[in-house]
Image: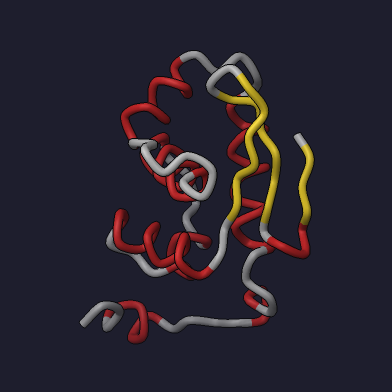
Length: 117
């Protein structure tokens, strides 16, 4: 796995080949839509579940495969031969790096409660 931290990209081997996972504004917005949570809340999750990993991979891979579905990504995860913890780390590091200055942002509880209203 490799990454281009300046662009929110990483390369993973999944689904039988090497693929570029890319996070930009539209992918982040789509991930927020899928999860019902804002990006700052997603990035502060204590434990990342398999659904969040699947959804992040799904939106991050759509640029390369327009007919991709979350189910297909889930099937790829079923067959994934690497360490799942490493995959999670790689994908979410790329997601974090796609947001310049996001490490300096803080979100208070009131802002999080009003997200999406």
